[in-house]
Structures are given as C-alpha cells and as structure tokens.
Image (cartoon, rainbow, N blue to C red; front, side, top):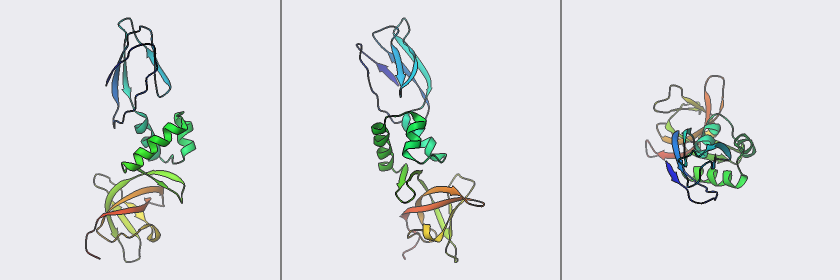
Length: 178
C-alpha cells in the first residue's frame, strides 16, 4: 500500500486486509509525524517518505483478539485503544461479512467457522472443520436445526473437558431432505 499525502492535514484510511504488509507513506513535508490507529510509527525522511513494515490493520487485530477469546466490546476497545464509534463500525462490517457474530444471550463477539456436523443418537454433536485437527463439541441445545451430515456455520465459545464447545448459527447446506 502506498499513500501520497499533500498539505499539512490529517488523513484517515480505512482498509481491510487479512495479512500483514508494508505501507510506504509519501508526503510533501519532511519530518511529518505518521500515526497508524493512533500509534506513532515514525517521521517522513528528507525525501518526504517513510516505509512502515509489518502493519496489521485494525480489523485483523480485532479478529485476532476475538479468535483468542476476547469477546466483550469494552475489553476490545480498551486493549486496542480505539474510538468507540470506529470499533462499532468495524464490528458491524465484520458481522455483515460473516467473519464474526454477536451473541445477545452470551453478550459477546465470536469468530464464525464453517464445518460438517455429525449428530449422535444421544442428541449431542461434533463439528469437523477441514484443515483443523480437533473437532468441536455441540450440546443438544446448541444444535439449532442442524441434522447429521449438514454443512453448518458455527462459533466456538469455550473449552469443555476435551474439546472446544460450539453453537450452530445456521445450516448452510442440508445433507438430506428432512
């Protein structure tokens, strides 16, 4: 990503990338202060340029926190020192893109995943995700309307005795007509 900035103004860039990357800032002012997400990253040099390496965008930072069990709005806001309004906008965008979900009962944000569910005769289930070594355990009351063999959208919400627990959010593809 390369930014060309003009004048003595503050610019805001909203971007969504799923990796770390470098940003080259070009300005018409030498020694200009450069901040990303409110964090000072350096000053432009005598050629009015600054290269910032290994930058992770705010959305990716938020997803990383949520994926590691930080689920509360205030907790995310304080860990990232982000404006409440900006955080709300980013979280809503992530929900619309099916990256995360907000559970009103548990009052938290959780990462969404896709997998295949197997429901046992006893009523509980297991979700397998392609590329992951460990299955997810689903309590009977967390199955939603999923049946064995269905492709489901779900979120992990806590570790049980052996496996991560999960809650089914939506059936994406039915294995059979029920």
